[in-house]
Every structure is written in C-alpha cells, then in structure tokens.
Length: 322
Image (cartoon, rainbow, N blue to C red):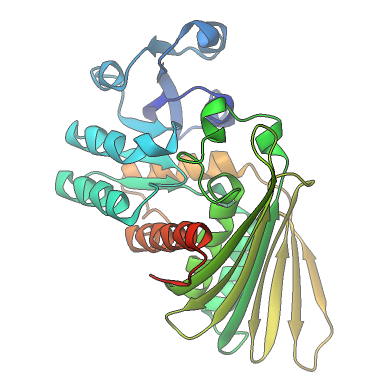
C-alpha cells in the first residue's frame, strides 16, 4: 500500500481522494495540502487526512511515500521538481506543464532523482480507448491515415475554481480542461505531431465561457488529424482513427464502433470503470515496481509540445511546427 499526499483539494482533488480512499488496496491518502485549509477541514476529517498549508510541509511528513498534484497548471513544473528533489514519486494532473521547456525540466528532474513521474490522463484507462489502441497498434486497420477527435462539456461553468478562468492558466479555450485528453489520445495512437493550425472563437469570456476551438494536425508519421473542443455544450467525446482497411471510433467511455472493409459494422459496449482509481493504482504499481506506467515520458513531452504549438497557433493565426 502506497501512502500518498495530495496537493490541491479543490473540486478535482477531492474527486481523486474519493476514487481510492477506503476502496483501493494499492494507494491511500494520508495527508493533503492547500493554501487555505479551513474550507476542507470537514472533508479531510472524513477521509482521515492530516492537513498542511504548503507543499514543503507535506514533503516533510515521513509517512508520505508519493505525491499527487492537483494544482493550478502554471505551478506543475516547479512542484514536480520540488517533489523529485525530495526523492518522492509524483503523479501530476494534466496538463503536465504549459510549455515544452517546463515539461522537459520536470521530466529531467525526475530522471535525475530516479523517481517515477506519471501524468493524470485517466481517459487512457477507459476500456474502449484501450481496445482502440490495441486495434491500431496491431495494424488491424492497415496504415493509420487520419484521426478525428471532439470533446465538449459544461464543467467550466459548473465546477472549476476561479483560477481556471485565467487565460494564463487555461489557454486556448477548453484545451487544459478536456481537450488535452484527446490530444493525448492523438499522440498515443498516431505518434508525435509535426505541425498544427488552430483557431479559437470566443462568444462569451469566463466565467461560464462560450468558445469553440478547432485545429488541423499533421503527424510526423505522415497522417493527418482534425480536432475540436467546446466548453459550453453537453458532455460528448469522440476519437476516430481511419486506416486503409477500416476505422475504429470510440464514443464516450464505453462505446466502440469498428468498420472493416467488406465486413459488417461491429458495435461494442464496455462496462464503465472508475478510470481515476485505475490511474492511481497504476501509479502505485509503478512506484512498487510491478509495472511501467502506461504513459511514457516521451509521450508526455510530445503531448505538451503539441499543446504549446496549438496554443501559439490559436493566438497568432499561424501554422506552428512542433
């Protein structure tokens, strides 16, 4: 059992704790940290968490074997470096960083310290996304030629703290909230991005924003891609890979549609899983040496490289090479 500390106990930090506390045999939280502990005292007492008002105080607790970060995006890189210097493994909520340089700095700090670095991309653990990757990786579609993705939700107007309304913390509309999950899937399925052209159209600024981000991608391997994310429409998520011999389309977290040349359409439905719990347990199993974390540091860096290029493209109106 890994005893973990969590930094950040806002809406998502609480979800992370509730995913495993009293439910998992792999990881439990023993301490939490946030700048103002008063609003979370009852939550901490209910879940058996000691509280600190700083990362340094949390790291000083000898009971803490590993650290989970659910903090503002701009803090991630420096906090990862601090956790690595303390010799503790770290799982950082997405996005790993806001720039390629910061992502590389965080990855390098963990490598030099010899500690595990994981990123919180819980959609990787959805069963339909895992089956999609298996199909693509085994070449069942022949050569992957094109990928499309879309993600929308209304979380920005319902749950997020005020810091998420800042363009500095959440650039390019819905990219840091939901869009980064699909971008991670693009990199996982198609490899590194070569270039991106993006546009952001804003009808209403935060709070409760109304905006539409769309982007075209080219990949190093020669494939192409299309992507969109909205922050003001009901929950919807789709990833669709097209190959010479067929296509595979994941809708939401349970549906998968497989189309193969000359064969009937195959529609699969998987049982829903607690992907946050699975993500945390995979992190714990990596810390204990049972398995490698399913997201490599090369993929982490490729995703943030593409993310930064997309943000720059949306801001400048130019196509950006990664």
